Image (tube, rainbow, N blue to C red; front, side, top):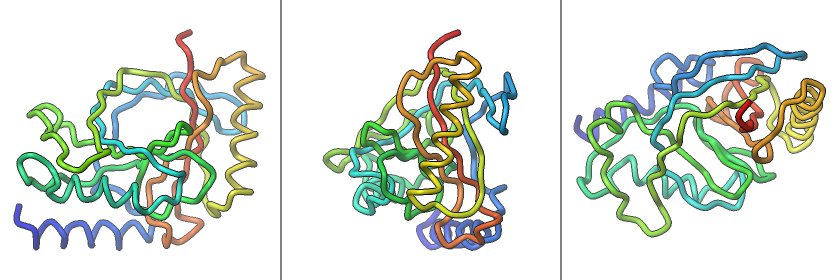
Length: 201
């Protein structure tokens, strides 16, 4: 895929994300193994490969930029890698990007497409960016729409931890944020999740 087509597809995905359309993004595979109160799900995720970097929190544009540069050519092959969802993010600031996972330990993470992982993902060329193999794991997740303010995040984190405590589920690490849509998405269509990794049953 040449760069023009790649950026065009990325733009189309972002525009569709404004309206809550995520069908073009590959997502990590999981199965829901238990439904708890207040909409909390216990999920069993398959192992997956991610690229991550240290960050100052959810709204760290520099961390997002390092990861985005990796998937747009800052890797040993110079190849382009499709964006996936979610982006995982932690810390107390607000995500500024399309799908990310960011851990409470101060990392931001993009999951790589399965085909890229199976073919052997290229090593990053930028300092501070690394590939990590995420093993199969159980994650508790609470989905919500609307605001990504620190207050909203705090409310949903409290709900998640209260429900898990009531059901005797043990957290392996502090809650983190998983974002599936751009920050300029229509708020009531946005998919946000507060999640926590759980210890083995």
